[in-house]
Length: 313
Ligand code: GDR
Image (tube, rainbow, N blue to C red; front, side):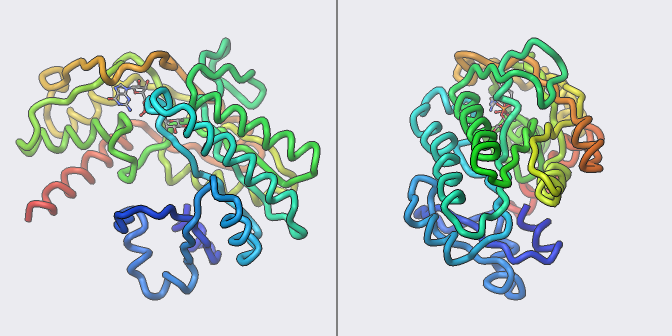
């Protein structure tokens, strides 16, 4: 998102949380670029549950557009830490809406919602009219945030939109999400550095798209004259087993020889099959969904092979 906005000539103010580890791998190249860092990219320490700091940053930077992608984003983990998931994902969004409502010059807000709000839907594919029926703490928190965005839009005239995003992947995906876990393992096993891969539910089906293309849709949404919600998806699903097949075949391996079923990675409730209908985004934004899931899997494996080889050279 940051790279896309910088390319478009924006000055970007990013919010980062304080941790004892100062390595920010995804931002590293920008952080080290003297033409960018503290010229067109500024980072501020802040946290969604720290209202005074966020308010001060908003007053100081006076943003035109806010892209709100923050929150606890791991669905499986939300069963272990439901309270903090709701604190950041649900209440954090409400807090941000409240602050925006108070500003004299209101910025446009894009909230990144999730297909998890649909839970176990009655219809497939899902669109903007599909009722929310979340079945996970994360899904419930996202449904709350999504509906609050709608309430602030209709009640207080805020320019606030929801991008209802289905799974979006790239080599930068966190290693605890299933796609990256698979591509990292396929790379490591092919190099003789790992012997097995422990996974949970292999039958789950997801609508996996390319994160880089989804960022374009997010930006397009805030360039509209009127705020609205859009489903951002490819309209095609694949199972976890399919993704395994794409990733392992790319390095000449049969995933069945390496995958071990591990109940630790099963969720108390899992969403079986989520498929989005991106027609409205195609029609109204002129957005084009990304190509094939197999291509994404292969690109991620190539990246992981290169990364592992670089680490050992
Ligand atoms: P998801 O993505 O829950 O859809 O949320 P994730 O990659 O975590 O899981 C996808 C499916 O794979 C199954 N699975 C496993 N998942 C993980 N993480 N680890 C495993 O070992 C494993 N084995 C099988 C899961 O059960 C699930 O069915 C993502 C996140 O990015 C959310 O923040 C976002 O809102 C949604 O996508 C859209």
